[in-house]
Length: 121
Image (cartoon, rainbow, N blue to C red; front, side, top):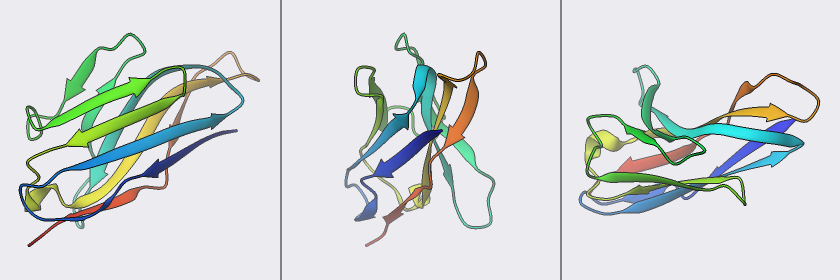
């Protein structure tokens, strides 16, 4: 089983910063893409940013230039540095990875439980 655990959410004022972390653990053979999604109340879950094992990144237009996704392949971790936060960034943030467990020749999607980010004065 592959498990993802997020940390780093919280309450921050507009213009502030937060850094989210996500650790993948379990019997993992390889990890391809790791990334972050978010879901605000009443809205669909949306991609925030992701990063491949080779370091190629992809960002939602709404966070481009403010958020930075990075990863540590040796630790199976992915990070999201969020700067210049806005109230509209308020959401539950979920870590997702595409990983191949040791017992399988196929890669699967795995999701974390989510961490709440609230941007408010």
